[in-house]
Length: 141
Image (cartoon, rainbow, N blue to C red):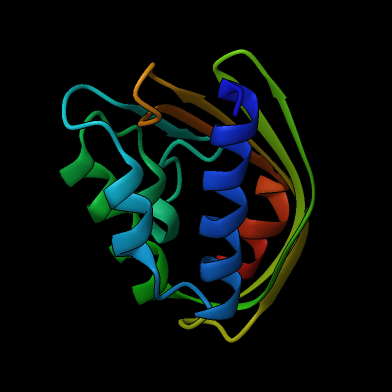
């Protein structure tokens, strides 16, 4: 199995669990992370208090905090990955997702792109997510 096939298979299963559990599979994501330095970022970058959990993270523990903040404040409605595209140590996921802000009961539905990088052992060392931040900020207000 090639590096691309391995990394894509790992993500395909992780996204399936994420969608099926409606965001309750954080432990599975954390198990895929490298133990040392991780670059984990989000387009919102914690700019608004209602999405402070989206600030840059640098460790597995930081990613755990991000995921905890996400599911404490937002309820997943849907998460659908349409394509996984791999080249070398990188995989890009093209998706669509919907979440409800529990504080406002407003829903954000957005296209989403996740960029992943894996080390030689198949552990996640880098992640960055792109989505409609304006819609997210509006739903949080």
